[in-house]
Length: 294
Image (cartoon, rainbow, N blue to C red; front, side, top):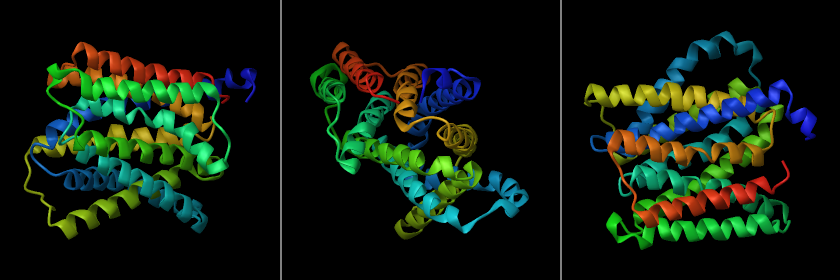
């Protein structure tokens, strides 16, 4: 994509939308962490995606004439990545801090070009390899060195690593399908698949519960409107205009916003080695993506 094209209004707007998405997502870590003291990850996701789909139903009805069966496959694939990424992230937040979850989730940015290598059998540029090494070193410092955190590498960190792989798959799936799909139907199908997955999970596990405090419902509604509807409509629309690698580097600001909001909302603190690890992760992300053609 030529520089002149990228500087035109639609691309600037797409970049701004993606930055706004990263802000919304950054706020979600602390909110989910707090809500999980009262409910389970699958039950929270059921409420979140239930609200999101209900809010989109009137729009879906008004746009019913634009529906096509060809949207089913891309919507199902992207939706499967979306649901499993959300589930592992929320599950991981039971055991790890919101700020650490944000930075580990940010590793998905490194994984986008690396997964592209696996899928298309091309060796990664040196910058990508160096960036990945920096990010792995940062993960070690973030989770293993600073004893003041009293939180060594744990199940929550492992689940969040799995989440990072799934987010990378989701970015690649949207990069593959967004340019040729109706962005509304692709978003709606992703959320519908996620709702179906979370409902199946809570039903089979017996975790379904609606006897919750108003704060849980308010949190689920906030997550549904800002971090789900606005964020995924925006991301799906923006990725029709820009490449997956460019999307990834803009969304790499998410862990920064996550750490800031966790500090404000939950009073979370990271020790000096934790901040060094976070810096290495961000440095690795930017090194890998700024040197990647997008």
